[in-house]
Length: 109
Image (cartoon, rainbow, N blue to C red):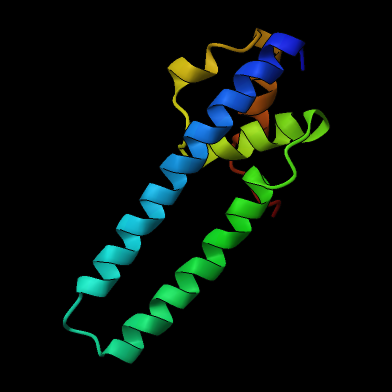
């Protein structure tokens, strides 16, 4: 990743993390507001969501280094936390790599 891309990635990293957190908080708000479930059921559902989302946070946002930036960018893009316009700030080579890594894998028969 070129120096200019690294700088842009660090900026988008912060933006994407805030977007991710906002999505998780909205999800938790919906769970909290679900009066059809008992408080304990809602608590367990929130705990499950946080545990699952924590894995994404670890993969996409922890240990910010230039050597892992491309993989993190692909994860962030796959999560819908940056859009195509923001991805255009990167070189074609980087965009191609991100798109390749962020495509869902198909299982072999």
